[in-house]
Image 1: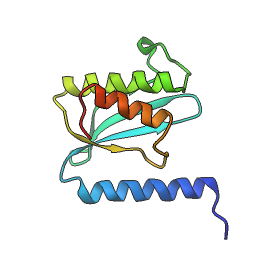
Image 2: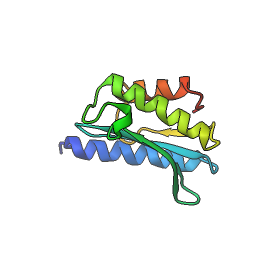
Image 3: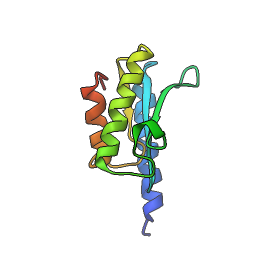
Image 4: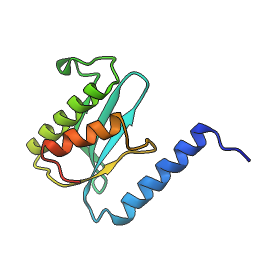
Length: 119
């Protein structure tokens, strides 16, 4: 029985999230979503159920509206690192969802690490 791309994506997403929840110990989660046109990231506190900081290419001040490329992902990663520092966060878990860790997702993670986030 062949799995579709969507089914494989959902399996990967559940596997990643379950691992994070099992080992989180109350740490925050840096959740990434990538669409065909934009990329966004949120810093989520799962215990309280609130988002502490977010960044996206949909924000006009970043200058990448409607773009989903490696440069835009790196800019979003640097922005979320700045906003996390402003919120007093230094350590979190990286939740890539069902996306593979290469290309745009890797560029975002590297930029966030360079900005001072530890995961």
